[in-house]
Length: 318
Image: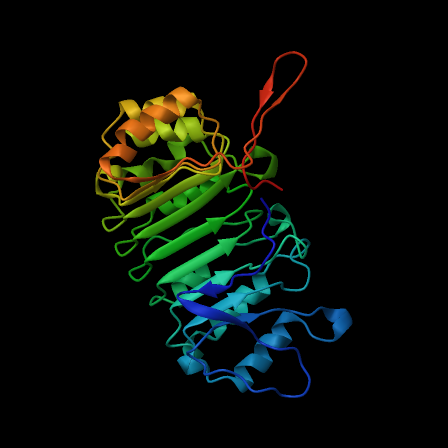
């Protein structure tokens, strides 16, 4: 699986690309779209910083509800520190901002695990009314937020999410958070988490309103399933998502033998390596109780070496 298209919508708003410099075209109302701002490169005469300055001069920023940061002029080789700094400095100009996405790049612009990231803490500190935050790319990513009152949706898309980010989220007080999505990835691309790193999240103590939990796209999916099977947070979830990773019979059996999952509205396990016997048990127990269950195997294929070593792959790596 590759990310072949930019975000079509964000924060329930259609996305709109702020145009390149040139003849001034008509623009939508400031609060009607999620604005994507992209740098067009030094060779084309405009960096991200220049595009942002032009955006601020043309759009009524006091009404902007959602911003999407696209390429900042070579995200594969430079971190978005200046981008973050400019957004923080402009916080008083965006009183209505409720959603921010950092790193909306397709694979043609930059492979997901090549995207250079940074500490995003200043953005959360600068925008206490933010309700939705998303970031793509894990290389250099850090999260040190201790408390944020407004966040309702939080998403990390990566081929390798640093364990410090998983632990940081679990240690943060996020009383309004309802939706958490983490693509943990693989060690090859910096995804060094173990299931124990998610204990703060799985306890649910600091996430009292969490209803949708996705811990997916990892090589430790069986270990995560074992941890989830007895996790306190599960009892109040509506959606549990362990998809896109290497979940196999061991993890599936742990889920089936653990706490009941029939209260869920949806259990998402797509892109998995579960055998037919356990798939049938899931259908006969969880699905038969009325829970929507996604068991699509997708493109989850195994490779086997001559020595019998079996390799399984996450949906999104490089």
